[in-house]
Length: 324
Ligand code: GLV
Image (cartoon, rainbow, N blue to C red; front, side, top):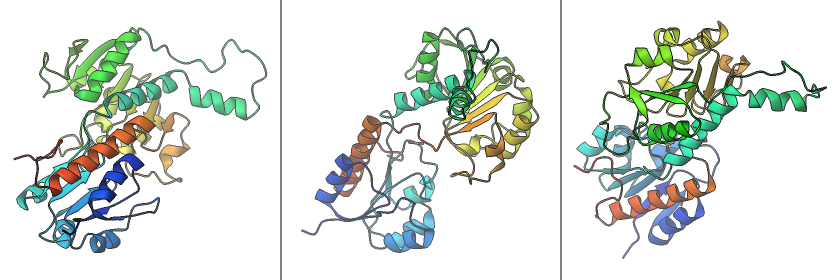
C-alpha cells in the first residue's frame, strides 16, 4: 500500500521527524525560514497530512490547494491561531496541537524574563562586555525586588497557573484576571486573588500575559491598558505578539509610562532589526523561544508526529483542537 503523502513545513527534532518519515511519503522543507506562501500552496497539493508551524498561515485557500484528500493538520505548537479552525472543521479536517508538554518550559521562560527585567541582567552583561566594569558600585545597575512584589497573571490557564506556582516560591503576591477559568478546577492553582483586568493593571508590579490570541484578546494590552499600569511596572509577554499593541507599547516605554517590557513574542514577528522597539533600553526582546528546551521541543515533535499519524490512520488524534 502506498504511504500517505505529507508535507512537513520545517525540520523538527529527529525523534518526531523519524516517526513521520517511516510511516509517510514525506516531503520536508529544509530551509531555516518558512516556505513562501506561493511555495506552500504548491507543496501542499495532493497531500493527506500537513505538519506545520505557527509561522505557517493555514487558511481555507491553503486547504483547498491541498485538495479533498487532506485529512489532518498537525501544528507543532500549542497555540493554533495560525490555523482557520472553522475552515478546517467545515472540510472535515482534524487539527492537532501540542498542549501540556511545553507548559512548564514556557512558564520558566516567563519567569526568566521577569527576573531579567527586574534585575537588569542583560544590561549588566552588556556593561561588563563593553569594558565599563571598573569597581563595585553602591548605586550601580539598581533594579527592583522580585520577592514581595505583586505579579498580575492575565490568563490562568495551564501556563499562567505554572507561572503563579513559581511566583509563590519567590514570595510574590499573585493576582489574576481570567473570565473563563474555574477556580478549583485544574489547571488552576489556588495561589492568587481573582480581580478585574483594570485592578490587575493598577496593582501589579509585573504583568505576565498567558492568553491565546483570539479576536477578543487581540490588543488586550493597548494604550488605555498600558496607561492603567504603574510607572514602575514590567510587562512580560510569552503568549502571542498581537495581544499587545506594539505601537502603544513603544509610546508607553519611550514616555516612561511603564518601566520595562520583556517580550518573547512580538507583532510583527520576527521583529525587523530596525523596529523602533529595539531602539529602547527598556525593552528586552528574545526570538519566540519560550518552549525552546531540548526536552520540550523533542516532546512537541513526537506529539505532533503522533497527531499526524493518528489522523492519517483515521483514528482520534491524541490532542485534537476540533474533535467534534
Ligand atoms: C508556541 O508559541 C506555541 O504555541 O507552542
